[in-house]
Image (cartoon, rainbow, N blue to C red; front, side):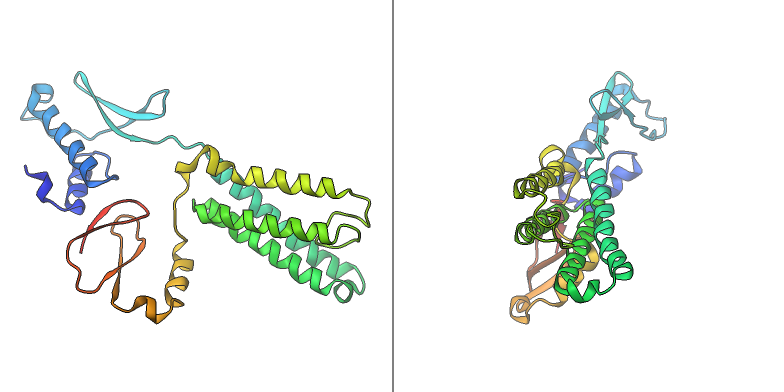
Length: 261
């Protein structure tokens, strides 16, 4: 069978029918199908035997393999450290805590909102940013880490500004806490937040969640969209723009799948 002449979508359908891994670039999918055909024609499986369903099992290295006769066919790597999910959960909880502090003090401290109106608004926005950043990291988006890191830098600078007074933006406690301690806390939190990028970058993907991406697309200037048309990646649903009238193949920058236009 001439796999090279087939589209990536048709190749993935064949992989699904044969119980093989579906994801990957076109050349990887073609190689996977060719290896499968060689295994069948090489006497590993009888001609009258139905195509078996591939049931992966994990090895110590995290690579999922399944035995077929005396050969082993690689069907994917399912290893996932869960670091991004853990950090996203912690950041989400911290953001909710920051927002809760503002509401708690506003409800039980007389004249609090009048004395710290600007600080309260900023603290609420910072907490909201942590919440959204944590949710994006939980969803597996790299931009969520960048959002939280930027918020930590902004929040750390405000902690220095308000270090000599009590404020919902600072842990200075009227100058009781040294500025060096504030710097240490901010730096430590930034290192923890960046761990998914340093230790498990494969668990994060580029781009924005679908809802945010739709807003970005809708608010884009018409001049940027002139002469271009929008399409969606058939593999990861990422929104793409190509020149109008273009015919051929394009590669998705998010999942690297090749799409026929």
